Image (cartoon, rainbow, N blue to C red; front, side, top):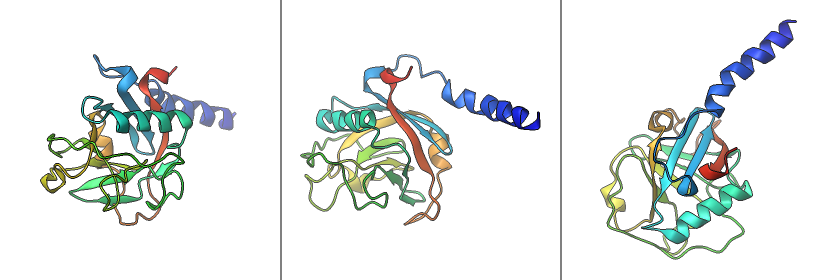
Length: 180
């Protein structure tokens, strides 16, 4: 009996996270929902700025590539980086080719989602980062692919480190229109 109650209680606490309503007016075809170990984060993709990068993130989300992937590099006052579904440590990428840069004049500020890359501008692949604060030194040098519309309080709770010990993870990543 106690086990049944424990299971029901666990389900009751999990249900709100799974059934959270999406923000009003959100273009579900161009929004990413990330259920993390700390809660839910939703960001809108900036297809107007970075159509190839936005399509890549949607493709990888639909492939399940991002599920259970850690936030491997999280720097206080800067950003939280994730998206290495190959090696889980920031050194891997997807099976797809690297993307050409889609730089824009949109500034890197709190809540902006950018594509991670090597020193080669045309090397973005699967990894991305969410800004904790302004980072003007990234402007016109990295691709802005989205902006958090819900859950920055969750991003703020992600465990810090470089590398992170026992990191928080993206448990499930979905395109909002795919959520049933």
